[in-house]
Length: 411
Image (cartoon, rainbow, N blue to C red; front, top):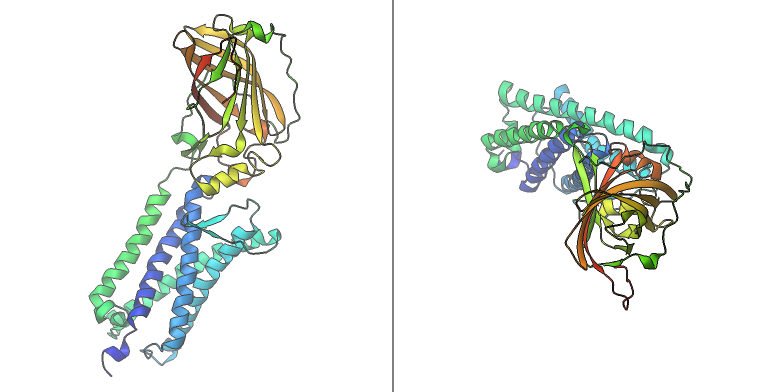
């Protein structure tokens, strides 16, 4: 029998090593990545690689159906055990990604799967009650996969080092065992390296220190909060106060600790009316409206989650409104303000601080606030389990004083 007759085809070899590298990465990632929502990007990558393994496995099976593999090197009991182990390997490579697909399809968080951030992958029409047993099965299959890999490596060592069958050359490019050893070492490095890198990612909030603000942050309360009326002192007529218009180009951003990282984003559409005298801040009358559908963290999938019921519930509550009815001067150009934030069906007291710079009819405004998210039922589900209790909000914009013959127009 010639050398070519006992080797696998080039396509079979390529598929074998691609699957091996993908499996090493996938298993290491699955065991090392955080199980909470701080690993959102890692979870999406894990799902993407899992689908890739499923497709590669189907391609490998299809190729094998129409292209007969080389004869087995052993026909004894050990040969039959080896074939059984190979069959179990194929079953694992199919069942592991399939159970993962089914698991995310039945998860209560309903996080869409976007393969490598490009292609939306559909969910399976399965009942939510299957989620927990599917998750347990998926994890058990991962351990079985590790055992099968160890058994497969042990079989190669037995055939090549003990029995001198040269089986490694059958699956090595060009029939060169040295290349097979090199590729096997690469698979090992991918698995160990991936696990080491991901496992070293801290999972506690200690790595993130939200900037302190003088405004008090209310304690978290149960998710469902009834609107709370806030009594405000009557102000002087609005026409007695200078009116200001917000110029285009301002920024309203937010960030929240998420494990050892932070999620940051901004609102693209917001504006309002400002009646404010820097010398008499106690008579402030400010209303800012925010289009919640314009919130973005720079990732389409997470933006979709922000608009969902677990976060802003945009369909039912499209806007947030901040109303300031009192402020006080805390320094040269510095102020603290108190008012009411209406968000997601709740209306609660809120404090913030800001600073004015400039003189005359144009001023620059910069400020910040720390908003407790739980009283507004923001991120109260599974995906928000690792979020910090307060959302840091920053704003920056220029404002022009309105003359008597101009109508204040919100941006």
